[in-house]
Length: 430
Image (cartoon, helix red, strand yellow):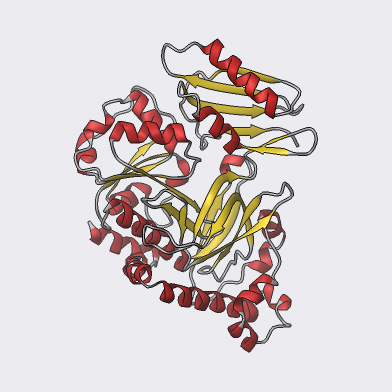
């Protein structure tokens, strides 16, 4: 089925397999990686300097020679951007280049505010090449191997020119809709038996285990599980790993910022696709480390020092797994995953993760903050557990630490995800 990926490349005008074959060399030669990423940044800045309608005027004070000699200094002098900034300057940021075909994308649908943008096909080539690279390095996957995806809408994009069904067939991907999962869901055993890899939303995989507890036994050749698109809680990781008897490797990515990362066998952070994305930190208004992204492979519609809205620390220390690419550590999800305090402070969702993980009877949770700062805590318990006892302990613990007007603890009826990606925390404080 590797021929199917070649056909995808031909139809989409991408070079996924060619870029994938290059990544192994970079992984074994850190000095080559650093040299190439600096070259990639220099190329991006030179394009912006000469051709981009927005950045060219800003960069007039730099010469070509200065850009080539000091690309990282030049980058640091460019403004920080975000979705609002990009929407405001959309027409000038979009500066198509004849030799760089682009594709329109959309993100942010789960927040109710869809965000439209463009990326170069070169970006798409590297993005999927890195996915295959991480799957291969940590899960033994070879491009073209059969795999199963259990997920919702954000992993269902098929690109232009051919249907989703054909796209998944060419990938050798058996796609199972994971947005609304019920007992009536039908699974094709022949597809599961052949799959070497399982990929999808953590909540969707977990929900499938609830309605189909026999799911792990239906896989005969499964090597690893990769999760993406949602925050992977410690509870969910433990449930999935225990059910399958295999490790879970969580992936974090943002197409709009160009970042694609994956956990390694050490599980001490997320290795960054450093060749094609530069990640840096900035302290936000709450004193938290927020990630800035520069997409090094999308020239026609640049994302430069872009606030994607995620919290995490960029760590450049070598990793014991042998892949010496920078990592995102202390990844805490979106900046919107915050509980706001009346005094102007905030509590991030990772606080609740740590709290609930100490209570082994809690198998899931959801938090909703009302506009008056009060909290509704919904918890799901394992069978035969006393809800009132656990709810009382949780309420007392939170009241000592989280200073809001009122905290209410109620049962979470079910763990099933909605049509949107399942959101652990929703704050309605403006």
